[in-house]
Length: 267
Image 1 (cartoon, rainbow, N blue to C red):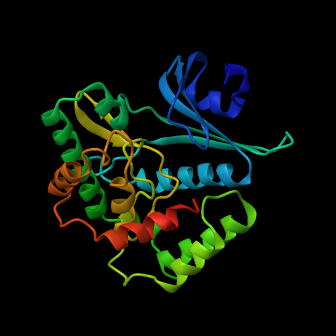
Image 2 (spheres, rainbow, N blue to C red):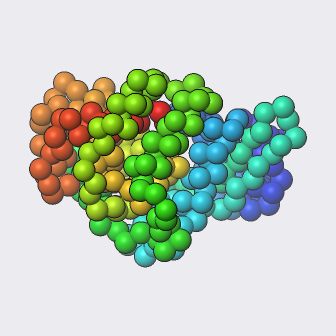
């Protein structure tokens, strides 16, 4: 990304761009740290209907979350969202607050001390517990069908129109083996070591909120504890113990984890 790419309506909000630094977080969008005359901001750019739609959903979620009490809010503040339809492929832009730090994934790679590792993973679980205990914003209230049924319908749409890892057979199995429902809470929707920011050895915030909703907490738990290279893999049992010590419950049953990981294959 170069500064001339950024729409004028964005720079009117964040100020004249002085420096741009590409960040490694983006899987579905380009993520850039913009140093401007007014400070540091995150600028995201996504192309196409699917990824642009996710960026639009993230903006709406951040707007809702911005109203939370500052002591409860884990999300960055949004500044502006713009859709650009002038090219062959539609492009969505989002500018938001910059949360200083590195991802939890990077922090675990940088310091291999077992005690440090356990402490961070315990705080990872504690952070998710804080999120799930947060009263959801009023304008994020769920309506109509259940969160899971809505996700299954969206999975079917994604399977039909986009390139996803899930299969028709997997989707049919998910529809026929739905777990018993549990009380819905505020969820992140992609809670992982890539989306949690660490600063001064403490968890400073959570990024990538496109999946935020009032939904099933077990979805967040399954995604948080799935094998991710540096965490929940070689030392899986130890990491699970540290995570759930922070979260404050017993670990999910394996079949429940596998169900929600299967659902994630469509997103």
